Length: 265
Length: 285
Ligand code: FES
Ligand SMILES: [Fe+2]
Image (cartoon, each protein chain N blue to C red):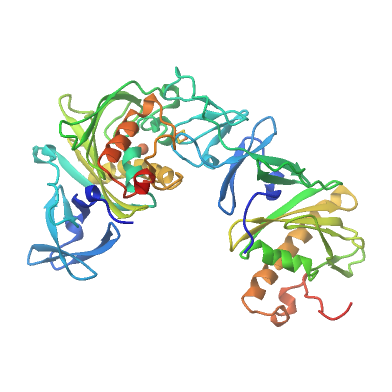
């Protein structure tokens, strides 16, 4: 099984899902993370554990550029240093208290994290991306990866004349669990980026951004199509493992996704 | 994990009297063992489910108690249960996914009131915890925290306005704790609120709570609602503390002077050689 670790850059959420003033939780195997964004718009990825008494910080609240633990109100600045202990405001918070930090980056509408010692640049993707959707798939990431790698997914959507366009998704792999799909023939998208977060040995969270083509007015439609397509990606990936052949699923239920022939071409 | 002698030597509440009515039985789990309590012709009997071995049983403080030990230490006295005019209200047990030791420590904690019970037991503007005393009794069989005080906007179901509440805490047992707080309607009396924790597993607890108060105005339901509101707020905390077991190694968490009771409780547990529901120092030894 793939070791769920943060030794390489890993997608942990959509940028848009962590708006300023909020905190949330993300799991990557044994790593329990709190992701939060202060009013300064900086995103931070920390160990999800208050050094005081172990409360998960993802239930804390963001005030300005600080994160306050919900158990006793210990408050941490953007660097993870404690600045206030409400029960003893006279006491200078112990200097040794510093929350474990992860390296983090935001690219292509996705928040990426890695263990602090990474020393490798976060993946970057040129162009204007819009975060589309995160979807949970009940399969390990390497299984999701192998589906993408086999190029089996087909994204279909109507073209300008209402004809259904079927576009085979030949992905390019940008490192672990990251699949960029260039769609040269689509009037709606230039590319789709799917980045898998290995939540556990049995679950993957797929974070997806799109680079839409054309006028901003069309972006909503593009996002909607990708969002529908993702539900079908999930159906396909989850069912294959359960032994249900995609071919056995009525096509009407899988309008956007087909399995390509394994034969040549 | 072998059960340490200190944990094994105690009595544990495993249900209320009314949970084991005549002709009825209750199956539950204590310290990793399935146990069955039964009452036939008024007589209470408790046995291990696995081999039917009988366990000692007694009925006290509105609850049914048992122990895995052949020669347990006596169940502690709560003299207030003998006092006239008090009402006992029990809530039935609530299951919490954490070590019972975490639940006791949370119960002893004043500093969380303004955050976890905001608007009821504390307000953020008055979050300071004044110095209080924590000491073991003479034989080190129990712990007492005294002269605790805290501003509370609604200290009890009977309270209509804010007051500085005075508290005492008693830990007569590693998995039991009792709070004595100023009675809002009687100057000379304390109201009691307590937890009898049944450690089901190291990281799973059935918490039996009780209220023993002088209160003529509130119905049992009102008193229960109040306690339940408070306890559910605490349960959310308890189920989100990492790790679930109580770390007894100094340095794994960060106590300050406002955490005197937590420091003393952990020290007492270490001294008694307790390992069940705790992490991990003594275990290695
Ligand atoms: S556990 Fe976070 S402030 Fe106490
Ligand atoms: Fe509480």
